[in-house]
Length: 149
Image 1 (tube, rainbow, N blue to C red):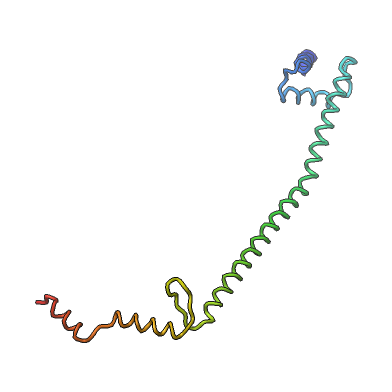
Image 2 (cartoon, rainbow, N blue to C red; image 1 turned 135 degrees about the vertical axis):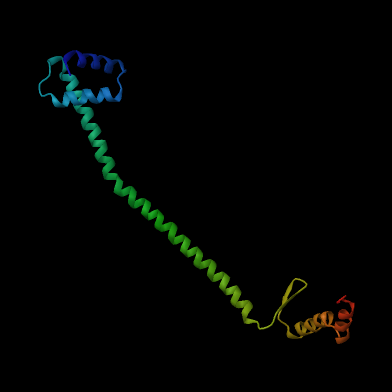
């Protein structure tokens, strides 16, 4: 880059009109030049300072990445542990209520109530069987009704 281009970019920089690419060109120019005209020494220091500031920000981000990764892994492990504990707790509750129901050999739900009284259950079973039972004559009467050629 020649002196006119640098002066043009510096003017644009001071007016706040440069793009990121143009500012990068200025940084590269001042970083690569050991000797600059006396009127540009302040710019060399400015762009050198910006370069160091940018590099320190990049290194700070690089150092914080493992900490952020560890934090995410810790949170994921906590969530997984909560899921396992919740699943175990739920399974235990469901299993205990199922075992409780299985411990009674005979049970019935009558009018929405759970009962294990064998006398009441036997009585209800007999009544239900009487309602659905049929005589031998009923079966043959049904066959007579059918129209079989």
